[in-house]
Image 1 (cartoon, one colour):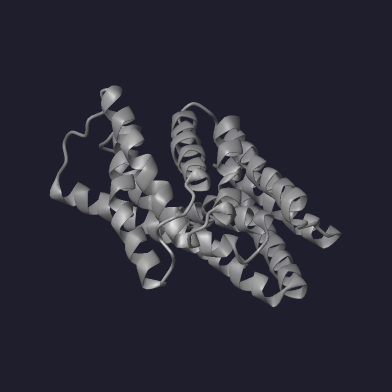
Image 2 (image 1 turned 90 degrees about the vertical axis):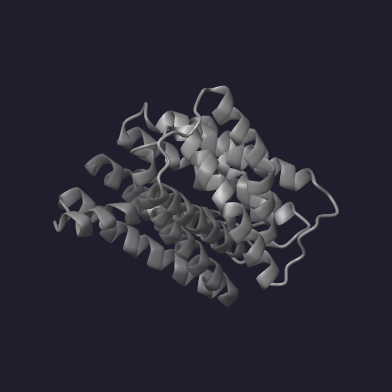
Length: 273
């Protein structure tokens, strides 16, 4: 879990280093990683079985949601600080329980309600600070928050897929389903798609998709929700450190307070689960 979060935290930096558009970087992250993920799924005996038309449609929807999530997040990464992009991009952790309340037609318990209030207060403070520092940062925050919402949609679809398929086949199929949508998004935005240098894109694919997502899926079934929530906080800490050292993105006291509120909300909502 620790290695997974460390690997995922370096993703935004690779996006900025790439010499293609941010959505095109997401396309290459998936495209370069897909063969390895498919090979791993086959090598572990995890070939998909019991595929029905309904399941394939759900996998396709998951792939489109993941593609839209990555596209929104990568657009946000180049418009706001690395710390904010990482925090808001992980908003699915808070949004997924809201779906649970709606599906169950139930009200949140005390921990969950308090977590959502903390997240709202911390998010508002971070967005306000972003706008004061640079009005363009607010757009990046909102794009990253949209990515978090889309990631929750991906979680919901993949939860249904995982009821039938093992982790690696599910990841392999959803990864393949996201390639063409990302290529379409990048072309629609008129981004440069073919890179002049491959280093950053290979690092993004291996670090974020293969190592980060692969180890995260392995660890999720073996750790308690509270441990997962606390470990998730590694990402914004590492991303904020990279942003400070590489891009001079220093956090003011108000930024730290906002980040701590969101971090506390992430842990509380996991504890409630």
